[in-house]
Image (cartoon, rainbow, N blue to C red; front, side, top):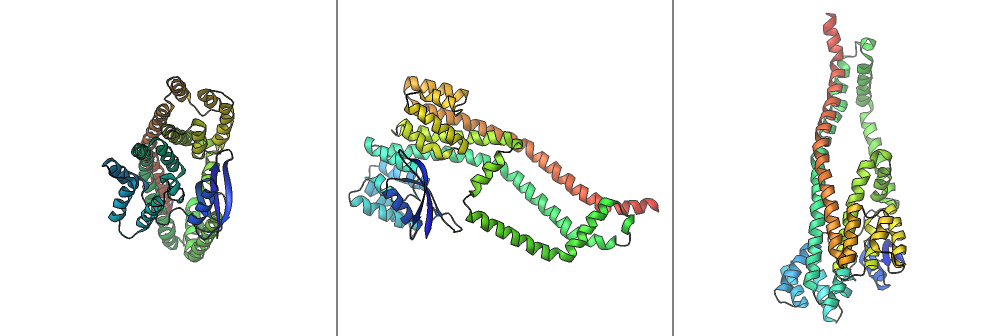
Length: 398
């Protein structure tokens, strides 16, 4: 089976590789053995993106439990052994067993983790590798847990703001479909004798009802077939949902949403970069590792900034020229350069961007929900009025 792997290696940047292997894990291991850090693995021609065989593996929970055991005074192997005994038969238990076996062979923790790129992301691997130099694995795990908690908190607020509008849209859509596919076809028989005496819009609506009643099943089967073919072609292509989202956001009408998505991406970028710097990763290496969190346009800008930084330009100046540092972020970066605490300042930048995203999500929910209710209500009322307009006219003529 062939796999498409997105990976990066210092000095080469992010590249795309094709590997022939029996499984995604084997493909990732081969790529990692060549010095690459694997970002994602996708089966070419398949229907699924391979990540972790057991998707139930919770990296954040694993890190929390491991940190607690280490702080209790257990060694790394003893802590993993305790986690192994706690788990029932599962992929997680088998994974921990392999980790323990590799550690007993004399390998370092970060080296062992690199054998499972589909489970442990590059950020996690970098933090563990840096902690081995300082001897403070517990602090590295704590920073990663805090990082994931903050990222999840913002994501949950954004998702929560969209749940109610999505529910309204779904229910309203079902009501409209019910009216157009059940009510309208049956009323078309009642109004058959009126013919051309009906208002034009009502006549068009009832002709639609007759069409649905006569060819509804064929239309439904054709729609399902078209949707299935479209989904199959989309999944077999190399576009992906990110490419579709990028194309949508490039439309001028989506300017406001594009800025919010950009702000969210900037928050993730700076939070990740701050975490890497706090873990002892050099700035340039951290910038390369966090690059994947940005969209295509921002990645090109970051490449230009990296060239300037390598040539001796200050980080704040290079990021400001690349339009990757808003005014507040630029000021914080300059302060960080003076105090030498760049990691903390980048975390503060991410907090500021997250607050903006959260405020926008709340504002969007408060404004969009009533507008959506009004729109759906007006649409349903329009259909009902068109259905009953002939009755009104008959009543008026009596």
